[in-house]
Length: 310
Image: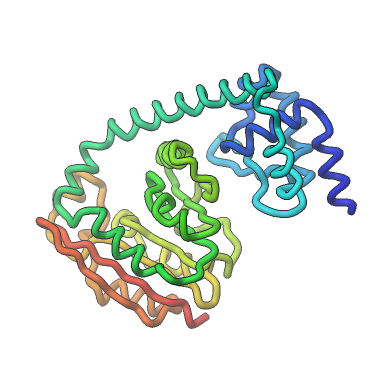
């Protein structure tokens, strides 16, 4: 009863209702919300603090920015969901807020597209050397099909493509990446698709600020060849997975294309299958399956193991 009263009190104010309606539609910063509502940042911050303390909004820091979105559970989510669905969209204030939000999201998408285009030449030059992404994704979908997975962590999410891929079949997804620019691209992609069950966080995949034994599945897609000590990432994945969780690693198998070091900052020229299996075995994974997709010059390896050891 106390939690419910706290939520109702927090929402019984016009500005906070407007903030709720906006944060239910997108992850937004204090400065963005201040711009959308035409109010000062200190005032918006005070309202957001009350909504956060009441369990109505979640917040997370991404570099120097703090993002707010609708809470992922609890009484706050239950009450807020009813209120948002009851919000009169024909109301002039609500209509103006949503119109401004669409303009802001369009601007975000434009900036994300510009960043992606600036780097697309490098990415496409590598993609032309290995198996097509759609073939890799087909195997990934088959590996997880028919299984009841509620939560997934994508470590090094990049553009958020794996979140898009698995969002219809997994209830709750989190993508982490160390690059704030890549997270902007991912956020824009997810918003464009209308995907609501994904969260994005700026994190170091070697040392996550995530509790242990939390996720059903973890994916590490084309990340390990950039990492000085890839075994650290595998061990960290094992830590955040539940006792029977699954880890899927996708990366290049061993190759001799030295130019990828200088031109694309690859730390490793792919990996031997037994090396990846050794890391996974040492981290507590067994029943490790391996698949290989040969391309023009690079072979993509897929390794999936089940966590069965502490």
